[in-house]
Image (cartoon, rainbow, N blue to C red):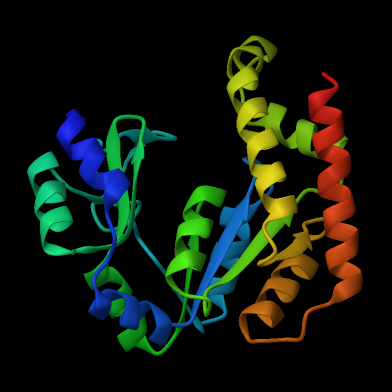
Length: 237
């Protein structure tokens, strides 16, 4: 990514019409550390028929996942650098961020499709993205998903790698990301915490939150306490 484009991404703010669209669209953001089950929860919510899974855009090239090439409009909308620049100049993004020298963001036209569907838009984002959305509209709902314990989370993470050596190589970066994500979640007051100790229970909890159920303070306190415990364990490594 050229430095000029990076500066545009960092400085980007959506226009008034895009902000109005965001405020008028029911949007639920699924946030959490890698390996906590966000994708599974989103997939289960979509199967219920009341949710629109948002597809974000990226300037990276499609790649092969589990032997299958990513498809445009499925995993991402794959844009060229010139297309990203055009959207930056024309206010075509709702939210956009630099990610590993690529431009990743939610296009206004994709949020418009979600709005017009009459369904609840749902997407997974990192804590920085969630903060950006919350600054743009306080109508956005953010759910922070947690594993049942540090030990179970580590087990799930290790299962994603073919060998212990592969995990050891990836772990330092994942550990740093997890500490940052937990610290932000603990201090940002807009999160609803859901512990994914049972997938059916977690999906039901997220569904209730998405439909405006009152804040469950007991669940909040339990979630914050667990997040703090995992953060302490990570820092002690």
